[in-house]
Length: 138
Image (cartoon, rainbow, N blue to C red):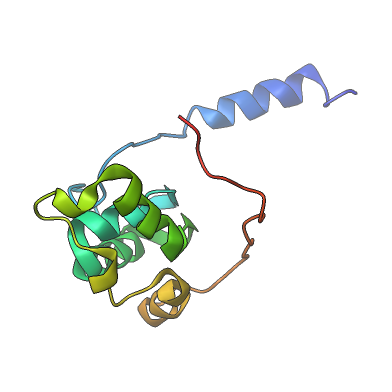
């Protein structure tokens, strides 16, 4: 099918020149507040939670809120608690120093929305995981 004129396609490509991607640990990121339009957190909230505990995850959520421009969007893909259990079992995390055991965490993934709303976020859209989804395969 025709996606539009050559001029429309060139205009879309030109608009992309203003897009900047930053791949970083947001807890270490030093940016001016209110400057980001979109922040994605895809399949990493579990790792932030396990490595930095409830307080680290709460710091991350608060920092996302501060960094987003008015009307900005936070795309969060939290992992279910069973994913935490599987990470400990399959990757031997119990033996790793400084790791927060999943049983010690108080802020559970099903409570993230409530916590985020308390920070001032509002839910735009939610999608449930497909039961057949198995996550990433290495």
